Length: 188
Image 1 (spheres, rainbow, N blue to C red):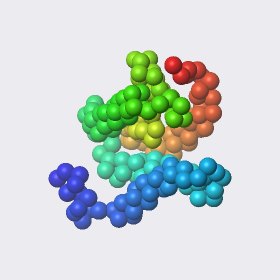
Image 2: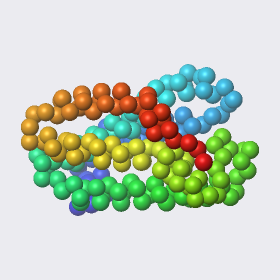
Image 3: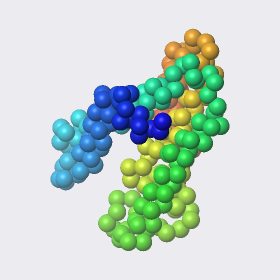
């Protein structure tokens, strides 16, 4: 049974489908910029307060739903990452390349908030360091899977999930504010 049959079948989780749809609607609203002072409006601040954490929550929930603790111990990491890279990285690379080419060739630099140049260095920067537009979510999700899934697999046989979650949360909280300074990413 493939994923579409699961969604249509009796395993449909309507709350998660609603949350996913709601989160997508919030992304559209959040990126509307319908007025010059849009970022000062309540709706903008409200949407940006939680719409991306909601996406990460839904992704994590779906991972936990499709890979319960009993299956996690026997999970083949190679197969898992191959599937994740195929489902996340391939579409990301395709659309990021497409957006990069459109921005670099068809849009005037004075019309862009973040102008791009049609160079290999610029392409690498906007693919692996600062994804174009709204695509940053996909490589971020890939990195989370690369870190969290092996850690959860390692602790699946024990009852150490809670300390692991606390450790990952503290690690993220400590390093997130200093990430740009640690790696000193420079725009080409």
